[in-house]
Length: 292
Image (cartoon, rainbow, N blue to C red; front, side, top):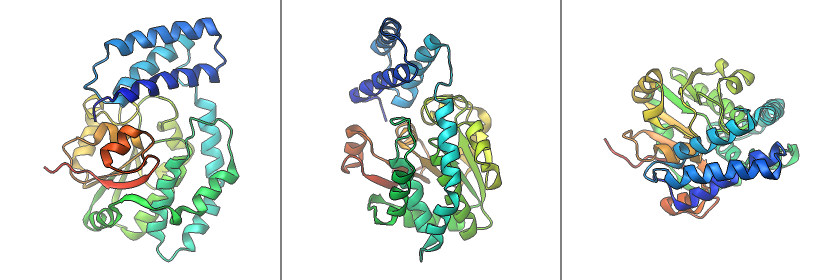
């Protein structure tokens, strides 16, 4: 999905979010913003926003001299969600269709914008998770996903955000219960960017208990396949099924030459919602429309 003009606003908001978080003074903030605006002026708009925003992120973090400013926030969310695992598992166990409920909870976790609010609200998170089954998927290809998993030998699960990764792990647990012969890989970003998951986040939630964790070798806000490491691309193209969490993965992979990709996310902007022809803020489980 090519960069949309609305994506420029997202780039600018990210600069403001990071500099406000670190209480950067007005003069320094202006220097950073001018540098970013210069970069955006000459950016290739035929690239996807996850790739373009990497440049914005690099400029911002270079100025503040911190490549991972969300480090502490990510730890908080990973820890807090991990502490809620037993409660969430109990909700899944009460369901007559555990796999479907685990799927909906994993997608619902994408409703929680961890980067937008830096204070953890356990009651809000539990409320959203407890009502996950009441959420209607605007695009519901979950049956196709489960049918694909029935015959799959390998699954590549592309992670998205901190905290949310805990519920991804739970979903993978139930996938392996339903399909015990499947080999699962969990893909993370190769470098820190915003609150996206890296090897550190995967280790923090012990993702290795349910999947083989692999880095994509890149720091884009999604999966820009031509920028990823060769070893990651091998797994990507050989996996029988790919589950891609988050809007960033949708933006960067929606036109890739793989047909068996399932996108699980919330359509958080008009550009993506319009492309899918769903209301903004809808949650979806959408199979990639590319056929090969």
